[in-house]
Structures are given as structure tokens and as C-alpha cells.
Amino acid sequence: MKTSEYTKIYTGDAIMVKRFVLELEDANINPIVKDQTESARLAGFGGGILPGFQEVFVHQDELERATQIINDITSELEA
Image (cartoon, rainbow, N blue to C red):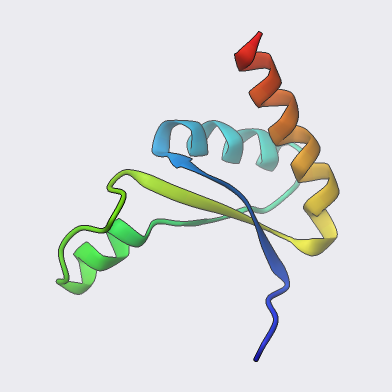
């Protein structure tokens, strides 16, 4: 089985994903966003299990910094 060099750091709605992506890019981290619902729609299969939910992945080399950014944002929103 092939192991990935990318790790999922967040799954959630598109609005939060956009916020995280902007913050990560500002820190020179290049996230990958996976939207299974949109991929299925484009392929002609219809919607997914959780419409509007996306996943954010980062390279393992950037995982520690990215996790800290995500934690900072979520703790800021909870305050």
C-alpha cells in the first residue's frame, strides 16, 4: 500500500476551509483542498454524503506549522 506524503488536517464546510486556506497560504503553506461532492458532480455521479464539506491536506513537512495555524483559528473562533 502506498503511503501519502500529505495529511488531512481539517474536514468541514467550505467557508471555514476558505479561511484556513487563506491563512495557510499567507504562511507559505500550500494546502490541497479535496471536495468529493464537487468531484462526483463533475464526473456525473451526483452529490456526496456530506454536500458542502471539504477536506484540507498539507504536506508532512508543513504539518506542524499548519496544525498550529488551524488550532489558533479555531480557538479564536471559540473565544
